[in-house]
Each structure stands twice: as C-alpha cells, then as structure tokens.
Length: 440
Image (cartoon, rainbow, N blue to C red; front, side):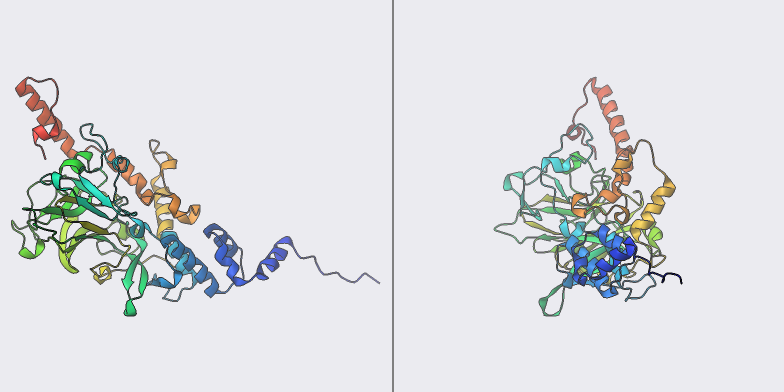
C-alpha cells in the first residue's frame, strides 16, 4: 500500500503573501511610493478603498496638506469619477507641486541661471527688500525710485498637461485643495495701498519671461521691454513685448481705462493652452497669455508663437513703486476662479496612461543628443520615484531650457551690428556699455 500523498509545502512567495495579509491595513500608509507600487503589483490583497487612501496620502504629503482637504475635480479620462486607487496613483505620478511652494528669487546666486549679454554678473535686483521666511513679498526702497528692475519667481509656471492642486474656500470657511488636470497655469500680484503721498507715475509690470531673459533686463528694464518677456503695465494699461512701445488689448494704440491698475488692486497673469485632446496634443497646442484684474477676466493679450512649446515661462514682475507687492503662486485661494476658463480638462488616451508616461515615450522616440548628457534629463517619476523635495521643480523641462538658452538671441546680432557701427564712427577700439548705446 502506497504512502499517503502529502500536501505541497507553501512556496516562499505564498508564505510572504500570507504574512502581508496578516498585517493591519494601515501599514500601507508607512510605505514610500516605490514600495507601495511593488506590493500592489505583486498582487497585494487589499481593498481599493485602502489603496486609494494610501496614494491620496502620498499626494497630500507632497503638497504639505491634510489628505482630507484633497478633492478630485473632473477626473476623467474615460474611466468615470469612481476609478479607485488608479486615479490617485496617476495623480501622484503627474502632480506638480511648484505652485504651492514657489517663491521669489532674492539672492545673487538665484539669478545665475539667466544669460549675460555683456558680461554682467548675476545680481539680485538693486534696492528691493524681500520679506517673509518663504519670500512672497517685496518692496522698493525710496532712494531707488525712478529706475527700472525686475524680480523673478524661483520656479516656472506648471507646464500643461499636469495635475495641479488649487486651494479654494468652501462653505463655512474651510479650505479644500481641488486637484485636476488643467490646461492653464496662473499667478497673482497684490499691490499694497498708499502709505502717505503717492509717488508720481509709479509703474508695475506684470508678466512672464523665458529662460533667455537676461541679467541686464533684470537690473535695468521693465518686463516686456526685452524680446524674451511679455507684460501688462500699470501706468498706461498697455501690453509690451520686445519693445518700449506698448499697444492696447486688441492691438489698438490705446488701452481702455479698465486695463490700468494701481494700489489696492490684484493683477493676475497666466498661460492657457489651445483646444486639443490628449496629453501630447495639449502640450504642443498654441499658448496664450491672459490677464485678470480684481477677479475679473481682462482677456487674452499675447499669442506665444515664437517660443518652443516645451520651454517653460517664469513669473516676472517689474517695479518702480514703493507699494508692497504680495505674490500668490497658488498657495492661497486666487481672486480669480481659474477653473472658470472653458475646456479645463485634459483627456488622456487611456485609463492607464499618465502624462509622465507619455513624456517618456516621446523622449525615447526623439532620441538623445551627445552634447546633452543624460544626467541633465529628468525621467518621469513613475520610473524613478525620486522625492520631489530633492528635485528642482523645473527639472522636467531642463532639456528644453538647455536647448533654448543655447540658441542665439536675434537681438544679439542687432547689438553687435550697432556696436560695430558706433565704434567705427567714433574710431574707438573698446565697446561701450549697453546703457550708453541705448538699445532696446
């Protein structure tokens, strides 16, 4: 009579699964993103509600808020609003946190990333006092009135499409962070009220600049005078781009009175992408710069056609006024409801796609350039799982900035031609300063 059959010994994987299943469900909340994805991929038998809460908690940690304050708005790519843990996992891959953590550049080293036209050193704007532990306010000292200078944000506006979180006041005064894939990015500047006698013709220029905005422009110009910046000026309500001569909304010679602003006003500036569907189409769609004033939409001011679609734009403000300027990059509720702009949602191609994954496929198709080392590139978080606090928020666009900053500026050619002409006429051998040439 044969021996009785014996039950097979449990495999190591089975034993490991049994040990995991014996743990309380809240142990998932102590995992880092990479570990959470590993155990989920390995077939962890956990409820969808628990996994959803775990990924949501990771998103809240990135933003530095309580997870109970996070809400999904219009989350959709054809999977419906109840897509379980997959929604929050995708949001974590594509979440852009720079808006909630952005601030002003206040030190000399902060301006080293800008190119120099004539060998200028990297200097913070002269005569500007920056305030706050997280620098969101600045003021010009009285002796420096009558001159022009600009301040820049540390990080650019988020590139679309990505998941962004906007704080909004709910009924009862509670604050909720609304997470959605948006085609718009935005910031606001509040101008303080007069203290004493107002100075004559104060000027504040609110706008955006490219990474080729020069150190010279930071030290001596208003936003919009440089060909790498776009702005709305407070004193005349005119729009400026690449010239000291402005134009009105609708390309008229004069702006309507409602386009001017001053003490006590809140001015907003943002970028909206054109109508498109799919992550790739939205990213490459035409960009338009728009403005708001005291929570009202002023209109679209510029078509950004001469800038590559993947080059980011930095918030940039010029000041020649003693009023205190307060900046809101998205850490507080905006005066303008950004979600009121039509066609808010970005439609992804499938419920498994993330914007990060789409970017990875595109970069692989485009190939790499030998002069751009791979260490300068930022792989999607879905594959690296690098904590965002260890990264520059502009890292996903680092390759585009690298390319764009190394392209010749068209103004450089004009400057060299005028300089050579003046030197020949004067019989000089040394070039004079930009200020003496008075070239815009």
